[in-house]
Length: 190
Ligand code: AMP
Image 1 (tube, protein in one colour):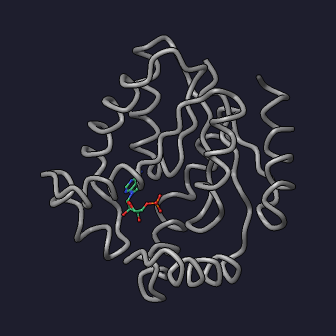
Image 2 (cartoon, rainbow, N blue to C red):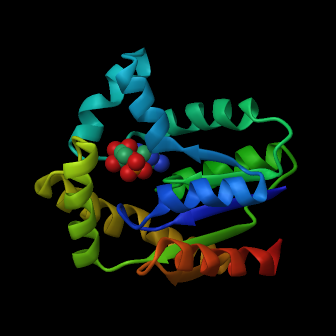
């Protein structure tokens, strides 16, 4: 199986590119942010638990991530692998993912980061706020999310570099150009 992590700060284009990658390589797209938003919309117990955390731009506790991940992984049968979008975001989550995949005789194949600077990210997210009206796309919450990314999520880069699984591509430019760069990297390992 090909288990791919699309990595990068909020607003780097992970969602857009993940959908295209999943389609091209027949992978199951797992976006933890989308799973949480769906639960919030449907007012499930999980949604009620995480709503406040997400609106403040903070990270949902790691234990909750393992639960939804186990369910998501097992709900896709017959796909060629996974594209993880917005997960893992902490070292603990990365370790949990390794355990989950190992149990299924699998492993992370490639972690690819979309490189986008902070100024561009803030601009993109404020624009997205106008279009999609996401509650966590206000300037204050955006800054919080970027700080959390820098402190808690960026350390994953070294974690995956040590395993020889980390690569990055330029995340600024036309969607299709970025997609081609991603595909080039995928095809080196697939
Ligand atoms: P995203 O759509 O990936 O930007 O996620 C939106 C929000 O959902 C994040 O700001 C977090 O509050 C929460 N979230 C999504 N994925 C994770 C994760 N892997 N770990 C912790 N919180 C998450």
